[in-house]
Amino acid sequence: MAKIFSFSLHNISLGSFWPDIKTDFITDNNTLPLPDIRLWLDYGLLLSPVAKIYLSEMLKPYGEFLPIYVGDEQWHILNCLTAVELDKNTSSNNSIAFKRNQVGNKLIFICLDPENIGFYCQEKIKSAIENYGLKELFIKTKHNDLITDKDIILAD
Image (cartoon, rainbow, N blue to C red; front, side, top):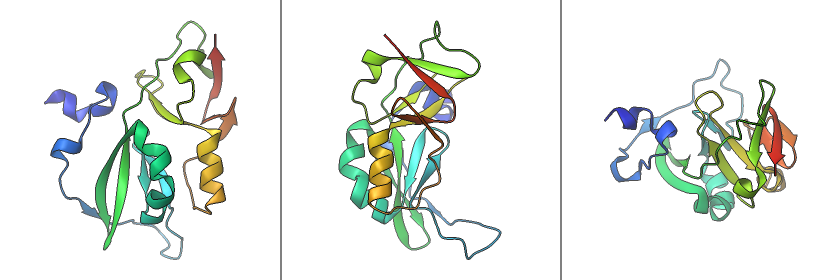
């Protein structure tokens, strides 16, 4: 049971016991537009119905879609189940390194290192979000076609 509460560190699928969840966004100012896509717990994505339609084919090989109701609409959480190991020999306090052959063509992945756990995506995902006109709140910086909040090194 303890593994379930830290499912991200153990890369556990949640689909078989995912409950019906109803929620809503709480903001200081209700005039702000809702994002179509945003980071969920640092290792998944919350997708609006529109974002799910546009991005599901690109994202489905890398995780599972978990339904969640926001108001009366069915949104989805993408629980990313595709993990890439951190290259600890090349990483530092200001940068994260992954083995180039592990990242390969994975459009999204998570890093399970407890100190650097996070969600990463290739430039192709960022471009799709922009091309479809989706409102996003998760993209931070670009480095070597990967998106994150730290510098990324792809080590050979």
